[in-house]
Length: 166
Image 1: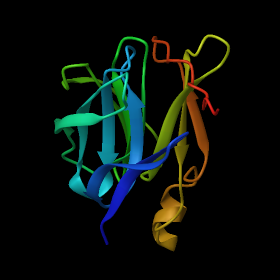
Image 2: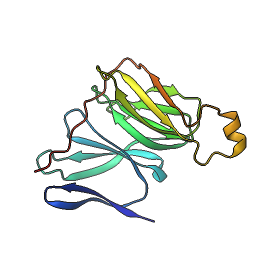
Image 3: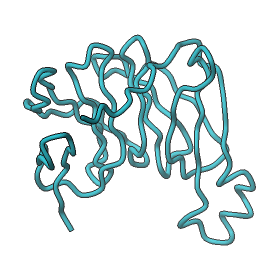
């Protein structure tokens, strides 16, 4: 089933992308001019140009293609690298601003669902996992599935942007 990706703001609901399937990851570049977007069934993270003044998105193109698993949640660090959780891959992949593989963080659970930078200095990468869809045999083989993991990858994340209502 295909749906639309929409934005809710002071002017109401605005469709940004049509015909998406499972929107999971959204993350803006440090300057706000690029939106990184994971629509999981496509097996890739796309990037779109974002008009900072209007919020309009244009020029959607593939940013990073995953060869194992599918992209789920993602975050962007202060250097513009995109960190994508890989559902079915047991890892978080970091890509340079140009879309090249930069780093890999392995996780002892195959269903990695999301990642975010946390801590006072935003230097801790928090990784979430799930047991959803794992057969009993796989659950026994992955006793840490469904847990939260942390690491310090040597970079800092971006602070969250609060919703600015009227």
